[in-house]
Amino acid sequence: MTETTRRERSRDETHHEIRRVARDLLTNQGREAVTLRAIAREMGITAPAIYRYHASLEDLIQQLCMDICTDLAAEMATDLQAIPEDDTPAQVFAVCRGFRAWALRHPQEFSLVFASPPGTGAPTHDLNDPFGRIFLTVAGRVLATRQLAMPADDKVPPELREDLAQFRVTLFDTLAEAGLDLPEHVFPIGAAYTMLRFWVRLYGQVALEVFGRFPFAVSAPEPLFESMLAELAEEVGLIS
Amino acid sequence: MTETTRRERSRDETHHEIRRVARDLLTNQGREAVTLRAIAREMGITAPAIYRYHASLEDLIQQLCMDICTDLAAEMATDLQAIPEDDTPAQVFAVCRGFRAWALRHPQEFSLVFASPPGTGAPTHDLNDPFGRIFLTVAGRVLATRQLAMPADDKVPPELREDLAQFRVTLFDTLAEAGLDLPEHVFPIGAAYTMLRFWVRLYGQVALEVFGRFPFAVSAPEPLFESMLAELAEEVGLIS
DNA sequence: GTACGGGGGTTAACACCGTTCACCAAGCAG
DNA sequence: CTGCTTGGTGAACGGTGTTAACCCCCGTAC
Image (cartoon, rainbow over all chains, first blue to last red; front, top):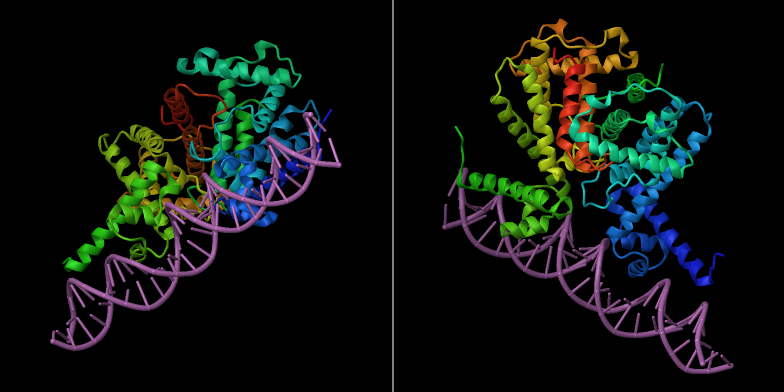
C-alpha cells in the first residue's frame, strides 16, 4: 500500500540524506559546523533547496535531535537483545553502560540532546521519545520481576506525589504499548521516586564525564563509572 | 602604587565594559547573541576595536566563563557570610541551594560553564577557579569539624585511589591558602570519594532541572531538590 | 497527446557574522 | 616638539540564515 511515486521516493531520499549529512557534520565537526550551506555543499545542491524540506535551520536541528534519540534507542535495543529476557539486572547494567558509552562516543550529540538550555534546539523531553521508552521498558521489566528497595509512599515528599503518580500512568501506558501488563502493586510511587533518583545519578555521572567537570582529573573514568553503577544497583536492590 | 595613567584607566574601563555587555547579551539573549558586532554596537564602537582587547571571540568567551565563575563564587561567598562559622552543615546547604538557585536564574551561564562539550569555549575545570575553591573550602570546614560517613579506604576501587590522593593534595593546598590547616587524618581518600559522589548527585539534579530533562514534568522542583539534598546530607552523615 | 499545476531546484540578494588590513588620531616619553 | 605606541575607524573578504523570483520537469486531468 505504499503509494510511492518516483517523486515521493526521491523526496524521501533527499530528506534522509539531508539529515544524514547534518548528522555527520555534527559528530565530526561539532554543533557550529551544522550549517545549511555546508549540508548543501556536501550534497551538491544549494542552500535554499533545503527549505523545501525544513522550515529553518532550527527546525532541522530538532529533527536531528529526534533522529539521534532514535539511533541511540536502536543501539541500546541491540545491546539488550544479547541479554536473557529474564535477567533484568543485566538489562539495567547494559542500558546504563550503553548510555555512557554512547555519550562518550558522541559528545556533541549528547550535549545537544541532553544538555541544551530550553529553547535551544532540542525539544522538551516527552518520554515518548524512543530513548525514554527503552529506559521505561527496562524499568518495567525490573519491577515485574524483582522486589526493589524503595521508600514507603508516605516517605515521599507530598509535593512530589502527584507528579510521580502521573509518571506512573505514563509508564503503565508505555509498557502496555510494549505488551507488558504490570500489576499495579509492583509500582508504588516510591518506585517512581527511586527511578528518578537513579536517573539523576546516572545522568550526573555521565554528563560530568562527557564535559570533563569532575572536581579533579580522572585518569580511570571507567572504574569510576562501574563503581558508581554497582553502588547504585545495590542501593535500589538490584543486587540481592 | 597604582600607576594609572589616563590611558590605562580608560583601557581597564573599556575592557570591563566589553565583558559586562557580553554578559548581558548572554543572559538576556543566549549564547548565540554574544557577537563581537553586537557588543560593539551596544558600546558605540566598531567590532574590530574589540580585537585590541581579545584575540578572538572564543578568547572573549573564555574570559566570560572566568567572570561567571568569579561572580558565582562571590554570590555564594555572600550567602555563606550569613551563616555561623561553626555551623558547617548549614554552610553545605547554603552552597548547594545557592548553586541551584544561580543555575536556574542563569541557565545560559550554567550551560556555558558547566555543560559545554570540551573544546567549546569553556576551559577545562581547574578547581583553581573561584567556584571550585568555595566548594573545597566548605568541604574542608566540614571535614575539620565533623565526622562524616565515608567508605573505608580499602573499599574505594583501587583504580581511583591515585586520582583521589591527588585530589586530596589539591584540597589541602587550597585550604592552606585559605588559612585552614587540616589534620591529615580527617581526610582519607574515602572522604574524597564521598565528595565526588556528592558532586555527582548535586550536579545531576541541578543540570536536569535546568535542562528540563527529568523523566516527567516536575511541577514542584524545589521540594524535589530539597528532598534530594536532605537525603544526600543524611547519606554523608551531615545530619547526625 | 497536450495543457497545466505544483514541487524541487536554481540564482540573486539582504542582513548579519568573525576577522584582517590599512589608516588615523590622540596620548605619552624623550 | 618629535616620534612611537595605542585605541580607534572604515573597507573588505568569506562565511552564515533567509527570502524572493524564476525555471523546469514530473504527474495528472482532460
